[in-house]
Image (cartoon, rainbow, N blue to C red; front, side, top):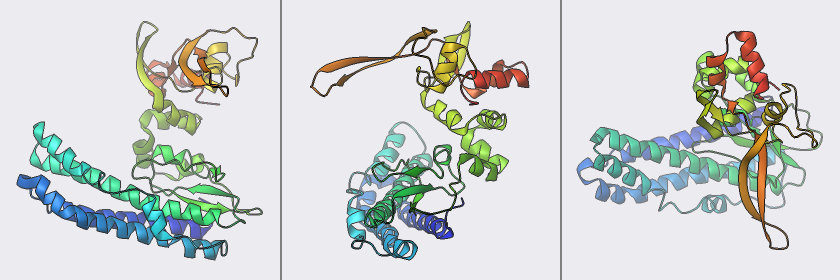
Length: 340
């Protein structure tokens, strides 16, 4: 990304701290007795909690010196301990690796596979908690510096598709930081007059190797993006993916973006492969795609019905299965709102 090098270094140091803490915690997990899993893990849980807290404290402690160098002093200093405490109690998260392993054993999995399942979950929790403590400290430090008006998401490769589509996006401090388990993205402060560019998902996608692209997005999605499909449309479509019956057979489709306000919905409703909205006067080919109740300002319950396209929005892999040739695939990608 073309953010300041210090922000990239900060991100890399945070990721390294999370990885180092996870390795130490996993080493402790590897010493549990498979024949007495519950007691042996409970005897080690306090040590693991201490290792995680140390990793969190180290991550949170880097926020203040980094921001002071980058932006200058703030209206007070960030308390790393408070940032760590804000991530919550460790008692429940540290029970889950043991419960997962015991559940696998009861279901007939091998001892090695059961222990590995617990180790994977423990590593995920550790990396997430360390990264969260650091991000909380970063955010508090930025808010304490009036010169900082917003923050930018810093993504370092390799990364998952969900993070890549948010790469370089600028947020106000009233917007929360979207993250998933094991997410190691960080944030960079932005001030009025900053001239560094915001690198977007397409730039990161182009920097990835072919193997990284397939791992992060899937082969069909990579093909669609190569044909000009919007990366965010391709990735977000997977949130509502489902198998439905259409055109006389089962197809892979998605419920994302099919309302009259979505690009795909506008194109499927109007039949115009370039449409971005559905005209208010248009009847179109619509149905109720979502229904829920909400409370109005006066306290009254209100039923809300969202209208959207009757036709399913095909997933990229389904489009490639149906397309007769490349031109046909591009037409379907446009019709389903992937090429905008």
